[in-house]
Image 1 (cartoon, rainbow, N blue to C red):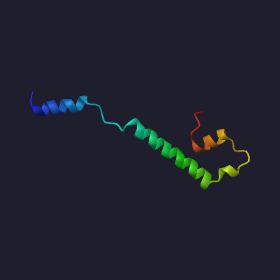
Image 2 (image 1 turned 60 degrees about the vertical axis):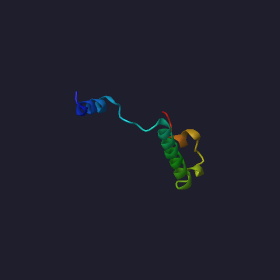
Image 3 (image 1 turned 180 degrees about the horizontal axis):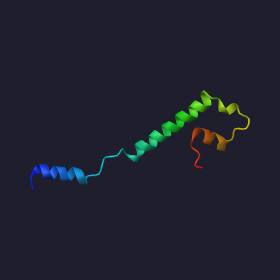
Image 4 (image 1 turned 90 degrees about the vertical axis):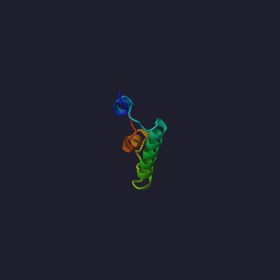
Length: 65
């Protein structure tokens, strides 16, 4: 087997490199932080007398349901 064939096989077998889980978690935290900051600073949702944690999480998009 020549080196070109070996290289092709190695590339086909090796899994695609993904970013580490810690980077994904950091990105998700940053996204959530920015959404919370936006809705508090810009939309001033805290002025709504009927705002609850459940409703706020739904607005921000972090509600599981």
